[in-house]
Length: 194
Image 1 (cartoon, helix red, strand yellow):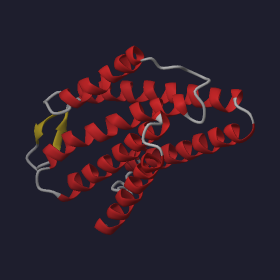
Image 2: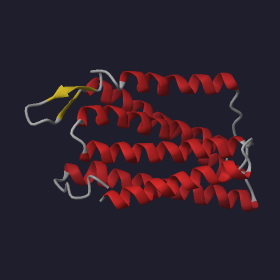
Image 3: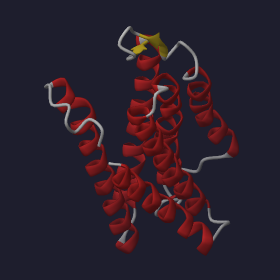
């Protein structure tokens, strides 16, 4: 299982670094790099959570990567394939950063995981989970709104790029929801670690 995680992490790092090497000053490249690195970090934390003795620590750290993904996805969608749809000023970016910074700080406290039960399983605090779910859902909804506008307002190659990117994200979200939310609720835990 380590090799699958390693391959996915390495591919994401390469995908993130390649545009930066080509044009390090382009905002789209920078946000895509951070998005790819956030995904890599989240995957690494998930691996450590399932394979390390300190699962409380890795459960908390996992929220850093998973919290950064919708943030950078939203920033990326506002710049890709064009900046015609929404212009994010530095003030707006700072405001969008506030929930992420809050989650990073509070995910390391008992607000998210209050400790371990007698079997060593983290005790989830529903308040932290609820706040994270609201944040994650609102940022994904904002991403979808911006991406759909990108598809509608762009033409030619830019329209195709927006469609392909939106389709890829939809496939990734459906796969993640299926393996991490739906199947475990139905009792199929075999795919939970994917």
